[in-house]
Image (cartoon, rainbow, N blue to C red; front, side, top):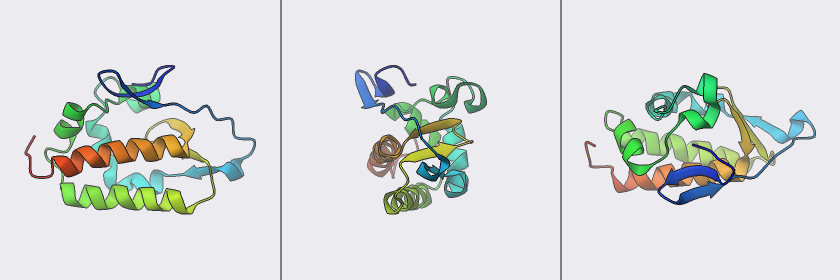
Amino acid sequence: MTTSKGIRIGENKWINWVNNNPSNNSEIIEIDELLISTYDFWTGLETQCVAECCGLDAFSFWEDDIKEAISSIDKTQLIIDLKNVKAELIKTNKTIVSSDKLNNLMDKGVFIQLVDHILTIIENNRDCER
């Protein structure tokens, strides 16, 4: 969930939100094409609502919820896919990430931090069924 502090990733743990106000579309990278292979994972994180309604607030990025979302997904492939998303974002000079799937517009650095958080949990729980 997001609040004025940022994206909540655990008890008293946050990824700080960076406000963005793109002056033109050249600053925005659309990432849905990059995320397609990970859509099942993101859908599994929609525990609070649905993204179409609440954007990032629909998702839970707490460790237990991420572990639940990866329980029936090929973790090795998900790691590869998320690392590819991150690599593509690092390569671009664009600073704002846009996603219809996540229903959000956010600072690229914030999204990379979120992906890093998710990757750490997946990598630490690669062998777990849940």
